Length: 476
Image (cartoon, rainbow, N blue to C red):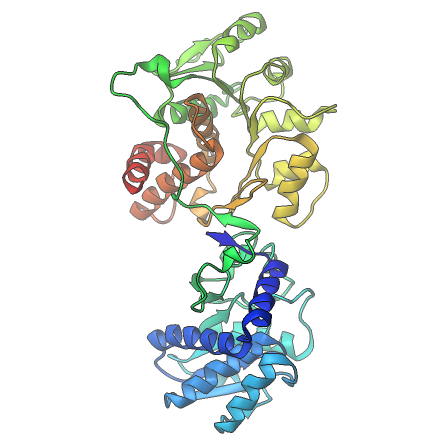
C-alpha cells in the first residue's frame, strides 16, 4: 500500500480535481465516510469543529449531512471559509439552514456519548497552532480527557502528515480517518500516541496511485516470500551465521541473536564469545582469537556484529567490515561505526539497525524527522537501514513503514532478536531480508502481546517466531 507525504498527497488531489472537476464531490464523499464512522459510536450530540481550509469544509460537510439525517449536530466555525471547495461546502450548508456558531462552548456543554469531529487543520499545516486554532485544539483535548470521543479528518490537527512530528499542540484523537491517500506521517514519529485507530477511505477513487505514486510503502505480508526449503535439504543448504557479540557480561544479547537466527531457519550459527561461558547447545563457539576469527568468517554467509559486544572488539569488527561478507550492524557495531572516520561506504551488502539514540551518534545531528534521518544514514554510510522505534522505517529507495507500535517492545534484547533474525534470513539468501525480518519480528511480538498485553521478554519473541513463519507461509 502506498503512503503519501503532504506535498504529494496535495498534488494528487489537485490533479484529480483539475482533471475531473470533482473537488466538492470529493469533499462530500469524505464527509459521508466520516459521518458513517461517527454514527457507529454516536450516542449523543455530534460536534463538528471547522478550521480555515479544506478540512474545515469537510467538517461542515459532515455537519450538513448529519442535519439531513436529523442527527443532533452543532457546528463551530473558527475562521471564514471564503476559498475553493470549502466555501462551496459552507454555502451548501447555509442553503440547508445549518446553524453554525463562531465560539467554542463551555466544556460542560458536552455530555458522555457526544463525538467531536476535528476539522481544524489538515495536511497543509506547517507551523505551530496559535490563537483561536490553538484554543480549539486545547478545547478538544480537554473534552477528550473527559471521555468525549474524537474523530480527526486525515490527521489530528497539529500533526505533520509527512513525518509524524507534532507542531507543539496536537489533537488527541480516538480515530483518524485518512481520505483519498494514506498519510505516511500517521504511522511513525509521535503519531502512534495521537492518531488513535487509523482508518482509510479512498473516496471511491480506485488506483489513484497510477496517476501519482506515493512516497513510501506500508509494510505488510504482500510480496514477502520466505526462502524456499527443500524436503531433501540439509543444514548446509541454509547458511552459516556468525554472531560477534555476547562479551563482557552481556552474553545474553549474543545468545538471543544466535537463537533468533536459528529460529528463522539458518543452518548453523556460530558465536564468537568467551569460551568459559556455556553456550546454548545449538550455538557453536568460536574463541576470541583474532587469527581464528579471520579463518572462521570465510565460511560464513552472514555476520551479526554488535549485540552485547562492548568496546574492546575493534579489531574483530574491522576484520568483519573489510571482508566481502554480508553484515548486520547493531548496537556496539554501530557505536564502532560512529567512532571511526569512514573514508568510503562499504561496498559489500550490509544492514544497519539503529534506534534513535544510535542514529544520533552516527550522524552527530538530530533531524527531528525520521525520514530525513534514514536518508542521511544512507547518504553518509551506504547500506540498507532499519530505523527502529514506533513506526520502524526500512530503506531507503524505497522506504517501508512498519505500522506496528507497542511499548511492550521497549525491552532489553528485542533489538538483538531482530538483528539475529535478519542475519539468519541473509544467510538463507532471502530476498528483502530486512523487510522480512522486521515483519516476522513484529508478527512474533504481536502474538506474545495478544497473550500478555502489558509486557514481554525478548525470549518470548523467540518462542513465537515459528508461528510467525507459518502464518506468513499460509498467507502467501
